[in-house]
Length: 313
Image (cartoon, rainbow, N blue to C red; front, top):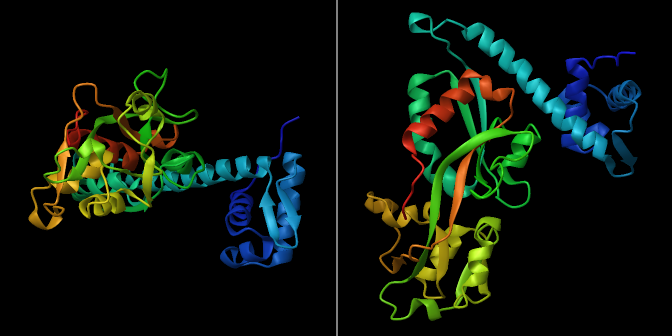
């Protein structure tokens, strides 16, 4: 027996309740009433044969099934938008090329948003002026940017991927590839005679699985004595003489920028960690269905053309 289909409005209701945390709150963006939302959710649960939300005095919290269903619903709704946009743009460009208009949702960790995306988005705008990109900075902790894509909250994620030794660098259920290999370097107060003796300044996103083995083998690296919120705060603390840091190349690009206003103060110095320095892979991830869309393919093309794999600090 075939399962009854869910209508687009039912998918929107499911997403709204998951995002807003309750039936009353979801009724506002849906333009309806709390009772109508509650009735709709009960109907969806009957169709699926599973409880999607835990009801309580403080709202409605997705169950494991509800969270999974909401993620699928977001992705289905996004593909319905893409269907309309791509149908309108099919063969509409010069010489019969496809065009596209509408939103392109990008999730990126901080240094990627600062240094990788801007030139790619500039070129994308020149080729596809109808695309409306939005960039959300996401901490690369836990699910990170890839999690935003898997949950249907972003179309493309600029993510740190698994090391080259992994069977696949891309998280399950997603597709993507490595854009660049990012080396780590030592950054410390300029002119210090023995920077490796300084206290370590670090931040949560830095020491990931790709570098953990290397870090464990370095007996000169102490435990972090100062922890900052992000890599920009780390640079500020190191420039104030509070210690040294081991940072990836993207985080250090402000130190090597050719634009004077973008450069950090000359109180910082970068030292190579030698031929055995650790690296991390930075790439893009998207869903299998969105990977074929014009806007996503265009962004990936621009990223590939601007950022060959090697990257130096």
